[in-house]
Length: 129
Image 1: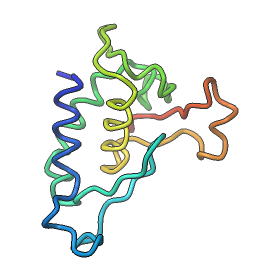
Image 2 (image 1 turned 120 degrees about the horizontal axis):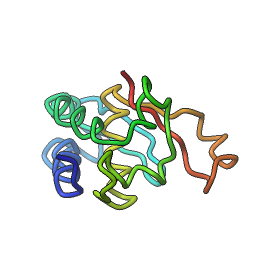
Image 3 (image 1 turned 45 degrees about the vertical axis):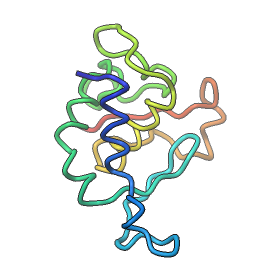
Image 4 (image 1 turned 90 degrees about the horizontal axis):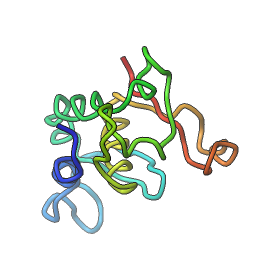
């Protein structure tokens, strides 16, 4: 089930821990993802360990977000699940979207330079089939 607490728990688990960073540099190459507000570096092994859960979370988004049924939708609409319930706020959406992008399960529909022409200046993203 898609909810903000579960998404945040997975997101935080995928971040580097203090002992995995030496002099401000991760001990292994992070999976880098550019979010709407922030950029993130995920621990590749832990990120991959959450693939199935993130895939389930993304599957709870409305049909418009999915490549085969809608082709992508606005970041601003992603706070509502496919059942019409609000599951989280914008920070939670960014967490889920970035986890999906980091795993190759989601992508932006347009480059960041073009976001300003979109409603609210927010990106559209799509969940890959």
